[in-house]
Each structure stands twice: as structure tokens, then as C-alpha cells.
Length: 128
Image 1 (cartoon, helix red, strand yellow):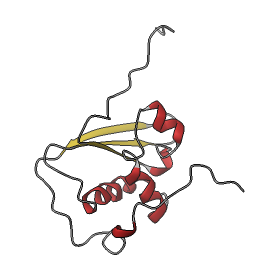
Image 2 (cartoon, rainbow, N blue to C red):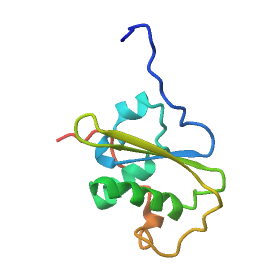
Image 3 (cartoon, rainbow, N blue to C red):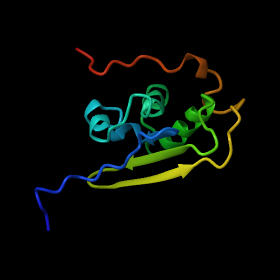
Image 4 (tube, rainbow, N blue to C red):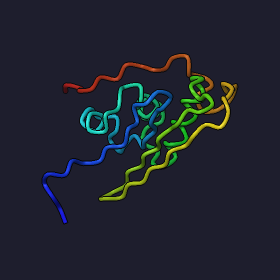
């Protein structure tokens, strides 16, 4: 069943008008996961900023990330968001959402009081 000559399938998420949202604890914020999935820092910005602001809120993190993208005014008609969720062990799920209309920047929500301060710099490696 397994052929070592086969290359792994990696979905193309780096097309224009696409972004990613993942559970922060899933590790998409990490350099190796980003590299393996060919994601840019911008693709995982919402995940990293959600982890910074709210910590690991498990599956609800995905919706904080979507709210971050909307609060930044980045949801335009035709845009796609790839939501990736990882659980314990081999649990993994993903969905691709396509924006049917341009989303107005919300005036309320979980990022209302601080969105102008984001993104913040989060070092890749913290030396102790």
C-alpha cells in the first residue's frame, strides 16, 4: 500500500485571495508546520494572534481567527479560508470556506477594542 516514491499531496493554499485558520495549539504557528504546508506568515497570522490574545481556546479558536480576518477587513467576495483543526492523536479535519460577499469591517466583536494593535511580533524561538 505504501510506496516510498510517492510524494505527499499538499493542498495549494498560497493562491491569491486565500488565507488559513487553524487551531493555535495545532502547531500551524510553528515554522516546520508552516513550511510543510507551504504557508506564509500572513497565512497563519490570524492563528498566531488568536493564540497571543486568547490562549488556546480549543475549537472555538477557529472562530476567533475568522473574526480576526474580518476585523482586519480582509474578507472580500471570492476569498477562500482554509480552516484546519487538529486534535489529539491522529484527529484532523479541515474545511474551505468561500466568501460570497465582501464583509464590512465589524464595529463589534472580540477584536473591537484592540485590532489596531495587531499583528504583534511573536518571536519564533524564545530563549530561556
